[in-house]
Amino acid sequence: MRKTTMRLLVALALVAGVVACGSDDEPAPAADTGASDAAVAAAEAEAAEAQAQADAAAAEASAAQAEADAAEAEAKEAADAAAIAEAEAAAAAAALAAAEAEGAAVAELEAELAAAQEAAAAAEAEAEAAAAAAEEAAAEQAAAAPSEIDVAMLVVGTKEEGWYATFIDSVNRVSASNKYGITINLEILEGIQFVEGERVIRDLAQTGEYEIIVGHSTYVDGVAANKADFPDTLFVYSGSGNDDHDGGDNAYWIDVFIHEPAYLAGIIAGMTTQTNRISGVAAYPFPNVNAPLNAFVDGARSVNPDIEVAGVTYIESWFDPATASAAAEAQIANGSDVIYAERFGPFAAAEDAGNVRAVGHFTDQLSLSPVVLTSAVAQWDTAFSDVLDAWYDYTVHGVPYNSPPQRIVYQSMVDDGSSLGAIAGDVPADVVAAVEAARVAILSGELVVPLKFDAFE
Image (cartoon, rainbow, N blue to C red):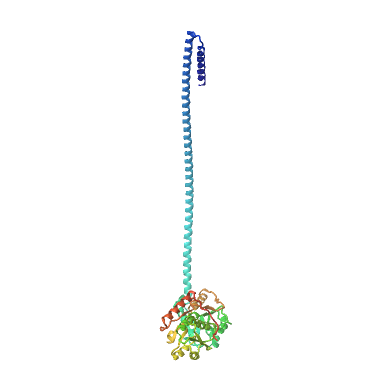
């Protein structure tokens, strides 16, 4: 294409030269004119040829460009196809690997499941064997376990006296509950003075007939003298006033406090008294005797700040109704019209006075006399049930007796150590409501009745 262009330029130059020659004033010869035309024609023809060649070259270049573009497109398409194919191959490989991994995981899980099922079957078989062995052991134990127990109880006065009566009631309730399937045979020995305690306790223990021997704390010397000689016998004594002796081993020292129901009884006394003077008759100035007396006065004063104490008399005996009645008569003469009867005797004096009421102690004594307003009741059910547990564990399971040396006290209504007895039908409804409100407050902990062990002067 470059040669064609050169030729065209040469032809144009020749034409220009001819024209220049003809510009002189003198006309050119005719022959020369013909030569010029021929040259022009030749140049034009050559230019036309050159143009044709240029057009052909341009068409050739355009075709080559189209061919190059097509080749490039084809190459790109091939590259895209290769990439797609490579990606598809990678995806297929990944899918294959995942499938292989999933297959391995499934196989592993199946193996683990089989192992777990095998272990579960073995554990179930072991559990069944253990259950069968336990049932067999329980059956053997039940066959060997005692079906009854003999309990002896020493009483200073009579079994009707409040302290003993409430304990007897509790033993009977525990027996009726059929705990451990055991029948409790209770033998009561009345009129045993504390100086006879050591001999009587030894005599009972030597018979071997009684698994448990029970007595008041006044018999503590007798228990202390005998417990080591009879390690298979369980000794139980209750109450306070003998702090120089400890329990321990096969001697259980138990006690209950009834100050909370005594406080409730005091509310009744404080709201029903006509003279604002109340009093009490008790045995000894021992802590668990003083506590309910103090609570009785506190309860009365909680609703009646004008309350005065006409007297508290300690008769120095656990059972002397005549002396207790005489003490009540003296208090009545001093203006008392509600008496806390910690001992038997004051009911008769109140009945004789005709306008005096009384509060019972230890047992629910409402049925004993029309003068009774209510009673502060001791409950030994939980305490004796715990004692029975100790005996059963020792007898059946071989667990040694291991009583704590200190007194075991069930000291509140929440502990099931006490309760308020039935209230007389002639007590006004507002008084009953006040008592119930205080009872609920005590059980919830909102009202705390203080334990006061000091004796009245």
